[in-house]
Length: 100
Image (cartoon, rainbow, N blue to C red):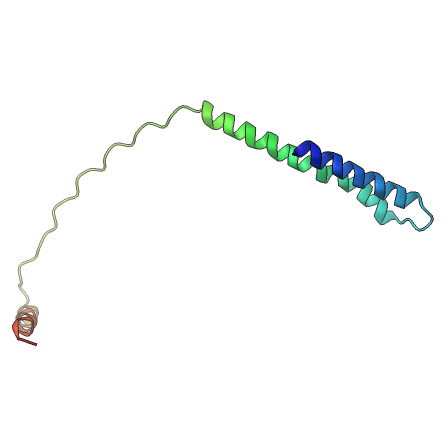
């Protein structure tokens, strides 16, 4: 696929070169002559880079398994020292017990 894109882009560069040499050619055509081969090389470079990264990934040693996390400390439930909070909780409990 990358060889096909390189061949296509080189053909487009040749076409831009012919346009540059024609009577109505501009320096913009010359710029495209230089850019089209670079556009064609880009997919080949990406293919090469992906293969290199995959080989590096496969050659890397497997990561060591992580140790299990330490057990969490138990949750401390405070005794209801606050009279206002205790009254509010009793009120909520009585509302919960009422039929709807």
